Length: 205
Image 1 (cartoon, rainbow, N blue to C red):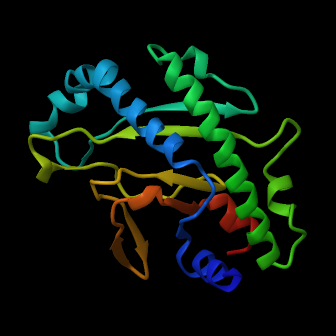
Image 2: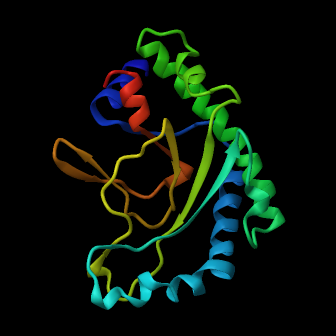
């Protein structure tokens, strides 16, 4: 398992994790409440945005509705407009479990690199602890899908990125050896892990 993890980090930069210890009911609840928040508070404003209105005159735009929550070292979750109390509470519980998974992965990655098991964790901790945030993204139905991509090609700048996907709709793709690999929907709440630019630099590739 350690060898498979090392190969995935070195050759691919991403992998998927099953049996990760996060509670399935909690993950399902997060997705349910995020979808409800989008429908109630973000959907109408997205379709009234300049991105949506300008679709017919532009090509290759990012068709994404998103917002960002900081959790550590300080949280801004109580400052986000119209976020329900249920979503705030569930998100806090989810992030606490997600951090445990990230710390475990960082220990295994450190061991594979011949480092002290807490090396990556401590490197990202800083004086006040690690920076942990959630990007919540929805990709709305588009009247001209041939003109858009949900999000353009990019690398993630951070450390260890843990992605909870929709279980029905595909769309995520990873680049490897000059080609794009399509990732299926996350059945059974699989977590996709992406090693960010900072981990690539820290580990010398």
